[in-house]
Amino acid sequence: MFLTRSTPTPLTAPDDFVLFVRVKEGRIVRRFGTQRNFGYMFEPGTAKDKPSAHIWDTETIHAITRRELARFGREYMHELTPDGGLVEVKREDWEAQQKERKAAAQAKKDEIALIHQSYEAHARSHLGDETVEAALRAGSGKILTDEEALSWAAEQKSQAGDAS
Image (cartoon, rainbow, N blue to C red; front, top):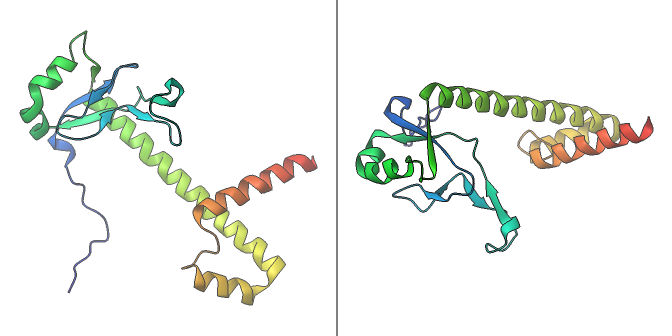
Protein backbone atom coordinates (compact mmCIF):
# COMPACT_ATOMS: atom_id res chain seq x y z
CA MET A 1 0.00 0.00 0.00
CA PHE A 2 1.32 3.43 -0.93
CA LEU A 3 0.73 6.48 1.20
CA THR A 4 0.26 9.78 -0.57
CA ARG A 5 0.02 13.32 0.70
CA SER A 6 -2.40 15.87 -0.66
CA THR A 7 0.24 18.59 -0.46
CA PRO A 8 3.94 18.04 -0.96
CA THR A 9 6.24 18.58 2.00
CA PRO A 10 9.11 20.97 1.27
CA LEU A 11 12.51 19.34 1.39
CA THR A 12 13.79 22.09 3.63
CA ALA A 13 11.82 24.13 6.13
CA PRO A 14 12.18 27.92 5.77
CA ASP A 15 13.65 28.06 9.29
CA ASP A 16 16.60 26.00 8.06
CA PHE A 17 17.67 28.82 5.73
CA VAL A 18 20.27 31.06 7.33
CA LEU A 19 21.90 32.96 4.45
CA PHE A 20 20.24 34.70 1.52
CA VAL A 21 22.22 35.79 -1.53
CA ARG A 22 22.02 37.18 -5.05
CA VAL A 23 24.67 36.70 -7.69
CA LYS A 24 26.55 39.66 -9.16
CA GLU A 25 26.20 40.03 -12.93
CA GLY A 26 29.15 38.68 -14.83
CA ARG A 27 30.17 36.30 -12.05
CA ILE A 28 29.74 32.55 -12.07
CA VAL A 29 29.34 31.14 -8.57
CA ARG A 30 28.92 27.43 -7.99
CA ARG A 31 26.29 26.30 -5.53
CA PHE A 32 28.88 24.48 -3.46
CA GLY A 33 28.33 20.76 -3.17
CA THR A 34 26.27 20.67 -6.39
CA GLN A 35 26.78 20.85 -10.14
CA ARG A 36 24.65 24.01 -10.44
CA ASN A 37 25.57 27.68 -10.60
CA PHE A 38 23.79 30.57 -8.93
CA GLY A 39 21.98 33.00 -11.24
CA TYR A 40 23.62 31.86 -14.43
CA MET A 41 22.74 29.47 -17.21
CA PHE A 42 23.13 28.95 -20.91
CA GLU A 43 20.35 29.94 -23.27
CA PRO A 44 18.69 26.76 -24.57
CA GLY A 45 19.68 25.77 -28.06
CA THR A 46 22.88 27.81 -28.25
CA ALA A 47 26.52 26.88 -28.00
CA LYS A 48 27.97 27.30 -24.53
CA ASP A 49 30.92 29.33 -25.79
CA LYS A 50 28.82 32.07 -27.43
CA PRO A 51 28.54 35.23 -25.29
CA SER A 52 24.95 35.69 -26.47
CA ALA A 53 24.11 32.33 -24.91
CA HIS A 54 24.76 33.55 -21.35
CA ILE A 55 21.72 34.40 -19.24
CA TRP A 56 22.30 36.24 -15.97
CA ASP A 57 19.72 36.27 -13.19
CA THR A 58 20.75 38.82 -10.62
CA GLU A 59 17.21 39.19 -9.24
CA THR A 60 16.59 35.73 -7.80
CA ILE A 61 17.41 35.42 -4.13
CA HIS A 62 18.92 32.06 -3.22
CA ALA A 63 18.49 30.60 0.26
CA ILE A 64 21.38 28.71 1.84
CA THR A 65 20.60 26.13 4.51
CA ARG A 66 22.28 25.89 7.89
CA ARG A 67 23.79 22.54 6.85
CA GLU A 68 25.11 23.94 3.54
CA LEU A 69 26.66 26.91 5.32
CA ALA A 70 28.25 24.68 7.95
CA ARG A 71 29.86 22.58 5.25
CA PHE A 72 30.84 25.33 2.79
CA GLY A 73 30.91 28.42 5.02
CA ARG A 74 34.44 29.45 4.11
CA GLU A 75 33.64 29.29 0.38
CA TYR A 76 30.43 31.28 0.78
CA MET A 77 32.12 33.88 2.98
CA HIS A 78 34.80 34.32 0.30
CA GLU A 79 32.08 34.86 -2.34
CA LEU A 80 30.49 37.53 -0.11
CA THR A 81 33.66 39.68 -0.07
CA PRO A 82 33.85 42.70 -2.43
CA ASP A 83 35.85 40.55 -4.89
CA GLY A 84 33.36 37.67 -4.65
CA GLY A 85 30.36 36.95 -6.79
CA LEU A 86 27.56 37.06 -4.21
CA VAL A 87 25.70 39.81 -2.36
CA GLU A 88 23.93 39.08 0.93
CA VAL A 89 20.28 40.09 1.21
CA LYS A 90 17.73 39.97 4.05
CA ARG A 91 15.43 37.05 4.85
CA GLU A 92 12.48 39.43 4.49
CA ASP A 93 13.48 40.14 0.87
CA TRP A 94 13.61 36.41 0.13
CA GLU A 95 10.23 35.83 1.81
CA ALA A 96 8.69 38.68 -0.20
CA GLN A 97 10.13 37.26 -3.42
CA GLN A 98 8.80 33.79 -2.60
CA LYS A 99 5.37 35.26 -1.91
CA GLU A 100 5.41 37.23 -5.20
CA ARG A 101 6.48 34.19 -7.21
CA LYS A 102 3.86 31.99 -5.59
CA ALA A 103 1.17 34.60 -6.38
CA ALA A 104 2.42 34.90 -9.98
CA ALA A 105 2.39 31.11 -10.39
CA GLN A 106 -1.16 30.94 -9.02
CA ALA A 107 -2.25 33.78 -11.34
CA LYS A 108 -0.77 31.90 -14.31
CA LYS A 109 -2.52 28.70 -13.21
CA ASP A 110 -5.83 30.60 -12.92
CA GLU A 111 -5.29 32.20 -16.35
CA ILE A 112 -4.69 28.80 -17.94
CA ALA A 113 -7.81 27.38 -16.24
CA LEU A 114 -9.89 30.23 -17.73
CA ILE A 115 -8.39 29.58 -21.17
CA HIS A 116 -9.32 25.90 -20.89
CA GLN A 117 -12.90 26.90 -19.99
CA SER A 118 -13.04 29.34 -22.88
CA TYR A 119 -11.68 26.78 -25.33
CA GLU A 120 -14.15 24.17 -24.11
CA ALA A 121 -17.05 26.57 -24.74
CA HIS A 122 -15.59 27.41 -28.16
CA ALA A 123 -15.21 23.71 -29.00
CA ARG A 124 -18.75 22.90 -27.84
CA SER A 125 -20.17 25.59 -30.13
CA HIS A 126 -18.18 24.31 -33.13
CA LEU A 127 -17.92 20.55 -32.55
CA GLY A 128 -20.86 19.62 -30.35
CA ASP A 129 -21.17 18.28 -26.82
CA GLU A 130 -20.52 14.61 -27.60
CA THR A 131 -17.22 15.30 -29.34
CA VAL A 132 -16.08 17.60 -26.55
CA GLU A 133 -17.07 15.10 -23.84
CA ALA A 134 -15.10 12.37 -25.62
CA ALA A 135 -12.07 14.69 -25.89
CA LEU A 136 -12.34 15.60 -22.21
CA ARG A 137 -12.41 11.92 -21.22
CA ALA A 138 -9.44 11.16 -23.45
CA GLY A 139 -7.45 14.14 -22.17
CA SER A 140 -7.95 13.63 -18.43
CA GLY A 141 -10.45 16.47 -18.21
CA LYS A 142 -8.68 18.79 -20.67
CA ILE A 143 -9.02 19.05 -24.42
CA LEU A 144 -5.69 20.81 -24.88
CA THR A 145 -2.40 20.72 -23.01
CA ASP A 146 -1.59 23.90 -21.09
CA GLU A 147 0.94 24.84 -23.79
CA GLU A 148 -1.66 24.35 -26.54
CA ALA A 149 -4.20 26.37 -24.54
CA LEU A 150 -1.78 29.30 -24.21
CA SER A 151 -1.02 29.11 -27.92
CA TRP A 152 -4.74 29.09 -28.76
CA ALA A 153 -5.35 32.10 -26.49
CA ALA A 154 -2.52 34.03 -28.16
CA GLU A 155 -3.98 33.18 -31.58
CA GLN A 156 -7.43 34.38 -30.48
CA LYS A 157 -5.94 37.60 -29.14
CA SER A 158 -4.05 38.15 -32.38
CA GLN A 159 -7.18 37.55 -34.47
CA ALA A 160 -9.15 39.96 -32.28
CA GLY A 161 -6.44 42.58 -32.78
CA ASP A 162 -6.47 42.05 -36.55
CA ALA A 163 -10.26 42.45 -36.64
CA SER A 164 -10.18 45.90 -35.02
